[in-house]
Length: 380
Ligand SMILES: CC(C)(COP(=O)(O)OP(=O)(O)OC[C@H]1O[C@@H](n2cnc3c(N)ncnc32)[C@H](O)[C@@H]1OP(=O)(O)O)[C@@H](O)C(=O)NCCC(=O)NCCS
Image (cartoon, rainbow, N blue to C red; front, side, top):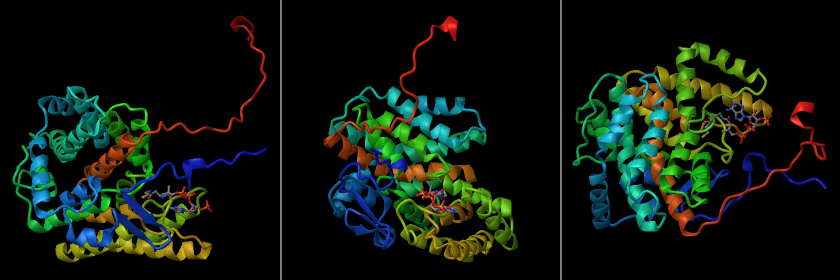
């Protein structure tokens, strides 16, 4: 009797969740019932993080208290800065991110507790510290001293401030905030699943988030935004886009980065918003090259996929690449920026996982040999 194999766990429901839902046919994403298109325009990253961790959006009073509770956690312990200084300057910054989370676990005397109060404390600490260590590593690898966080700024503004040492404009802070809201949560994506699977052993929250960082780094997941930018840089100009895309599509198993999704069969709603943001930034900055190349790539992919009858559309990573480029971030920092946002979603899922835990332990269909007789080492 042949057993069903769900390779890549495609289509498998591993648990229930109240946090978010994707309707891949309609192109809808909701965080606890609220449409992402509305949240991106109207709610801050702090508001959205509160929403993901609680049942509903905060009142003004709840939001102020929540924002205040994040601020004492902005500053990095000295050990983290020391570890970041020890990292090779040319290492991928996601190695620094993953290592910083792991080190934070090592220096937290209460790392082990998986009761909700402790996980909530760790959630506040990590959400506040992700921007701090991403920015600190960026400065250290460029031979600069880390900038201390400014408790007056929100997460988006503080991140930009700690990168440059200069107070960011309101416009830049807003674009950063929208990007964080859009990347905060996305159901049972690979890294969130990894975080939940690790937490399901009842190990500590830091271990779960360290593993999630490793998963996010991959080019089929959060690493895709950097891969998109790498492709745009390699292509160089609008007239070369078509050849580049056709070359990939004509090679066996070729994947154009920033396109396709396991769940969406229509355009990812986050891509629609980021496309608009990218367009606006291109107009404001007068540097429209990256946006125009992205549009051309989308046009060629649409045409080719339509010929093959496939629904492969731009995903969140596609237009975030040109947005981050126009905001001035180096390409290898795109995935760490994704992590700065996604920590809020990961933590929401850890609350759910620890609150109603079942060890994740799927099976595999064995297809190897059976019944072999053992030969002593000397006889082989
Ligand atoms: C995201 C991704 C891994 C989803 O993969 P999946 O659900 O396993 O789907 P598949 O890779 O099996 O693709 C299904 C079909 O669409 C096509 N396809 C999917 N994504 C494609 C892409 N980026 N470029 C070209 N073709 C693509 C495949 O050719 C495949 O056709 P086939 O069935 O004839 O082989 C995949 O779309 C991909 O590799 N995208 C590029 C990386 C990326 O942008 N990742 C970020 C996701 S948010």
